[in-house]
Image (cartoon, rainbow, N blue to C red; front, side, top):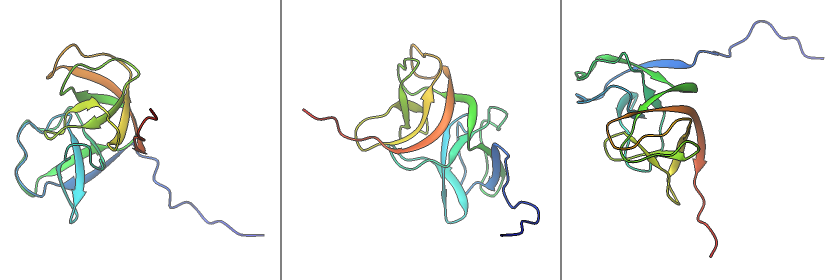
Length: 134
């Protein structure tokens, strides 16, 4: 029988990393980790999480950013979104409905009529969206 002493599991929904370069419009956008620093996520690519709403609008290189990596939060929409949509990042780190081959960063829990509005999401990091048959 194994002995367990304490836990190395961090249950926090957020992590903090420095910005790798200056990031404009940095509030509530998808970010990725590159060479140990944060950058805006690329369209359809892997996402670490979403910068929290309290993030400064513009962040300088080296400044710390708090990133939500799980649970429910807010993400800026990059297009129209319906509650229940699987979401991916666009080229500006905003939420858009995931297409085949996109990394699914979360699920929309509310709808957005247009780009620039807030959408409530569950951060899931569910892997890549499969192509549909037919």
